Length: 151
Image (cartoon, rainbow, N blue to C red; front, top):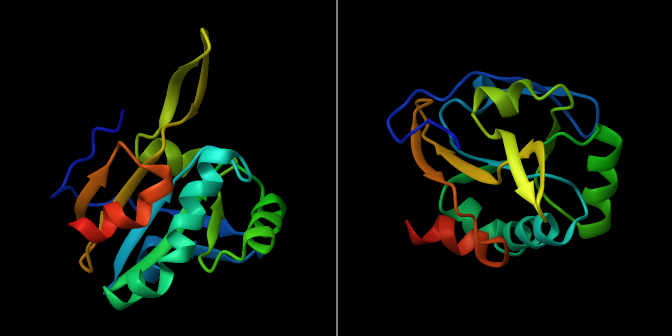
């Protein structure tokens, strides 16, 4: 669904983390950021993707990646999700969908014949200079870390 592509400048953002603090794209300047968007904490697909990243966190870090997740869940839900699964990466609560919309991952979806607005699971790799290096629109939830390491 997103129209952003490799080579585009990553949209700036500021968001609230699970602990109530804020973060922005500028906080990751000079580092290679994996910005992953997912629909909902503690659901099967989202948990599998987050745990895949958790399980390979040190390898991803050694490869120079910094991880940051974004969903429309609240900071409180994010904190519970992090604690329940031992997730080492911060999560942004984008309850007003501003970041989701800026990256083009919020929009119409269909599930079991029902249409609704929601998050299109997408991951962006943003280089140290703030440009999009890679866009993964077909996230393999069980092997998400392997998708990142394969490039």
